[in-house]
Structure formats: C-alpha cells, structure tokens
Amino acid sequence: MSLAHVTALLLLVSSLATAPALASTTMTWPSVSGPLPNARIGKNDVVLVAGVGRPFVLPPIPGATENATDWYRFFVEGRGVPVERAVLLRDADVTKENLLAEAARLRGLVKAGGTFWLVFIGHGAPALSGDDGLLLGVDVQATVRSIEERGLPQSTLLATAGAGHLPVVAIVDACFSGVRSDGSGQPLVPGAQATLPVRRVPPSSSTLTLLSASEQVAGPLPGHDRPAFSYLLLGAVRGWADDDGDGVVKIGEAFAYSKKMLGLAVRERSQVPNLVGRDDVVLFRGARERGPDPARLVTDTLPTPPTTTRTRPSTSGRDTFDRVAAEEAWKKRRVVATSTGFVRGAYATAVDEASILREGASVAPEAAAVVRDVSGRSGFATTAGIGVGVGGVLVGGLGGGLALASVANGDIGAGIVGGFLGSLLGITAGVMSWVALAPSEADLTRLSSARGDVAEALNVAERRRLGLD
Image 1 (tube, rainbow, N blue to C red):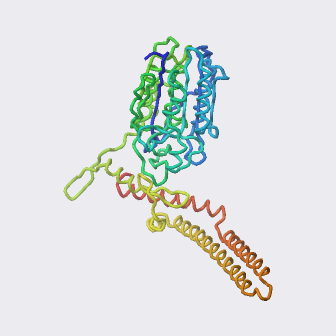
Image 2 (cartoon, rainbow, N blue to C red; image 1 turned 90 degrees about the vertical axis):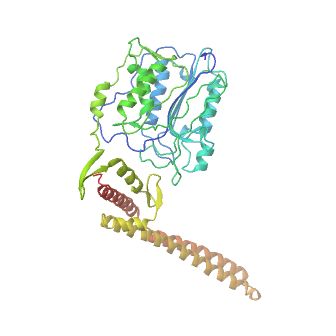
C-alpha cells in the first residue's frame, strides 16, 4: 500500500496484567524527556497526542501524561512538526468530543506528502458489539453504560483523522480487556466480568490498515512508573533501536526493539504488541541515543525463580506440591478491601462484610473490632437520622392536618404554616442527628486502614494454608 493512500498504523497493547510486572528491580531506566536535534522531516505533518493519567473516576495510570508530553516534544522538537499543527491533550482535556474535534480540525492542516500522527495513552475497554476497542476519556464513569456512551471507538477516531485519503500513523497504549491497570486483575467496572480483548477484523478498504487487538496485557515498566510500550517505543525512536548506526529509525526497527525489550523486561505477564501496516516509514533522522543494555536488563531485573514443585512428607512417603494450582486457588480466595466493604476473587465479587469479619477475627482481631465499631456507628447514625427526619415530617404533617380540621375557627392558614415548619424542623433534626452521630474523618481513616489490615491478614493466612509462603 502506498503512503500516498492511507496507512493507518495502530500499535496497540491491550489490557493490564493480572499480576504486577515485578516486585522490585535495580534497573535504572533512561529519561526520554531530553532535547533532540530537529530532523526537519515533519513540516507537512500534523500530530494529536492524548494522555489520561488521572481520570475523574477510573483508576489512575502513573506516567501516562508524562509519556504523552514526551511524545509531543519529540514530534515538535525532534521531527519538526510545526507547533500550530500539533495538539497535546492531557487529563481534563481528553474527552470524546475534544478528540474528535481536534482530529477533524487537524485533518484539514495536513500538507501534501504529510502524515497524520495519533498517540493515545490511557484506559480502553472492549465495545459491547465485540468488534472494536473504546478509548476512554477523563470523564468516563465506572459503569458499563458510561463506558459505552462516553468511550470513543478507535475506528471512529482513525476514520476522522484519515477521512479515507490521508496517511495515518497511530500509536495506542491502552487497555481493551475490561480490567484495571494496577495489576490486580479486577474489572474496570466493579461487579462486571472482565472480557477478552476484541479481535478487530482488518477493514475491507485498501486505504486503511488496522492492528487487531491481541490477547496480551499492558502495564508499567518494572521499577518505573511509565506505561511500558509507549515509553520503550519512544526510546527506540530516540536511537535505542538504531542497530545499524545510520541515525535513521523506521517504524519496523522501533517496533522490533520495543517487542524485544518488553520480552526481556516483563516476565510476569504476556505483553506482545502487534504491527499491521508499513514498517518502512521513517520516524526520525539523527537518532544518536543509546538505550539500556539488554544483558544488564536481564540480570538486574531477574527475580528469584519461583518454586513450581516441592515434595512434602506424607503417609505414603512423598507427594508433589502443585504450586500453580495453589496459586489459582488463592486467587479465588483473595480478599480486597474497598471504600464500602470487601470483595473477593479474581472478578472482585462483593462479599458480606460480617462474614469477612468473622474470618478475620482470629487473624486480625483488633482491626476487625475497629471495622465493626466504625461501620456500626455509621449505620446507626444513618438509621437515627432517617428516623428523626421521618418522625419530624409526620409530626409536622399531623399538625397541618389538625389545622385543616379547624376550618371553622379560621386557623387553616396557621395550621398549614405550622405543618410546613414542623416538617422542615423534623428534616433539619434528622440531618443534625446524623451529623452528630456519624463517624469523624479520623474514624473513617481508621476504618479504611483496618479493612486493609483485615484483608491482608486473611490473604497471608490463606497463602500459608495453601503452602505458598
């Protein structure tokens, strides 16, 4: 396919790890924020970069806005895209409407022979239709309806940018599996079941090439709060991928480097990006930086190999301990504290707090007692406030009713006013009762900490019971 037609190149890493990348590392990752020589090869291009690291409701993605800022600087300072044709959207500016409006506006600014560059770093989700991935802006709520309504289909954004005739190169570092980005494996929408990433069928149009969503997961670099794929790809562009030393980095070189480094650095999740489209497009000229040493990357981030089998005494002599099966069993029993109680298992199923406290009383008695005390006072305050409020309304209403019965005495107006005031005082008394009895901020902080202690103690005890620790 000719670049004069449309080459839409989507470099996508989907979803998040069901476990953290690595617990610890001594690896020091180079900065990708430093200045670059101006290659002056992007004078006819436009670029739209968006990064959502601090959504209003959804979980944060550390380093997402920083990666986006560094990509913007690369395009403007390194590739030489004119600043008036480059847009950087971060956090509060990243909405469905803004992305589409800026894509449509920039599309008209591409000069002859130029390319429309798209970079999105943030949350994603599978569309309910199952045939596309949704890019989630800062204002998307943690509900299925909000994700479907406020999420932007990636195919829509690409079509808006290319309009069927412009070359488009898109780099998307997002999650399309429906799970959180913190490595917990919990669904992005509480109570919803995580789904497999979408497999998008390449479009029939010869002017557009898309990357189908993979079944791998996305996440941060070990020991560095930056989304791994977009960070490594930017490092590759800066020269880390220039193995032949000619100072020119093409998409194929950058992609191959990122794929290799992801395989070396990230061992506890499968994160293998895909590339569909032309791989000979030049990203940068004048790349001279050197990246991390692959050999040191292996040695400095290599964890202690887990024990997969062990033998234990038994009545028959020795039997084999299946660690993999034990880990799976622990995931089903794992408890996580939330702001309203506890959830359990790989899909964060809500569980009754009282049952968790009964389990936790033996392993974390003090923490369990704090949870019972503060939760109980909170419930009592709510009940008392509602009771006093309802009682006041009823008394006020009764006064008004009695006044209506005394029409002959001419007291109806005073009775209605009295009824209204009585109801108002009743509601006020209810609110004041709730405020007086409700737990303080310090109590709520103690409650959150105590719930976390109960969950941790239960998880430690369960791992020991299963023989994992």
